[in-house]
Image (cartoon, rainbow, N blue to C red):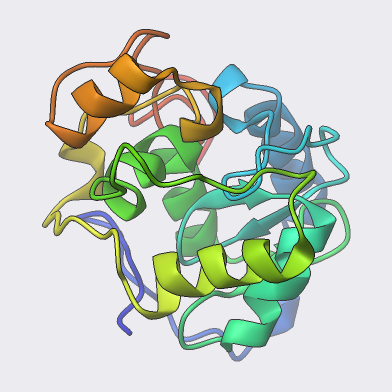
Length: 196
């Protein structure tokens, strides 16, 4: 699977960890800021509350996830999801740019676009095996995936499927706007919020 980088983001070779480590303090501060945005404050997969600055993310998918789901993502392999700790790991500039431009709301519009309204979306209280299947179906099998040439051009869906009522789920499935505001990317969507 090719890294899901927005247009204009050059995916760099990641062989020199010293390059990434040089910006650790600034990157960790930005990730903490971005994880506090309403659309990123909850896990992209199970909707568990993320603790700002202590959470996890998938740098190639551009999503913020909880500790439990991070373990499931690691099991998918780095060719599908590249998991990092938001406050312990080093990040390359292109990875930070993907996190800034995508975020949970935009990722939801891509990876969950074709979830049937009747499907019971697992949440943080669900059986771990059900959450694992949900994550595999989303990212490995691309069961609910909607193709997007440029993830920054999709309409963000700020409200998690777990929090939508039946009518909102129906609207989302049919490509209509869903209440809860648009949100942006991980760090404000391409606009002026956050440093690159």
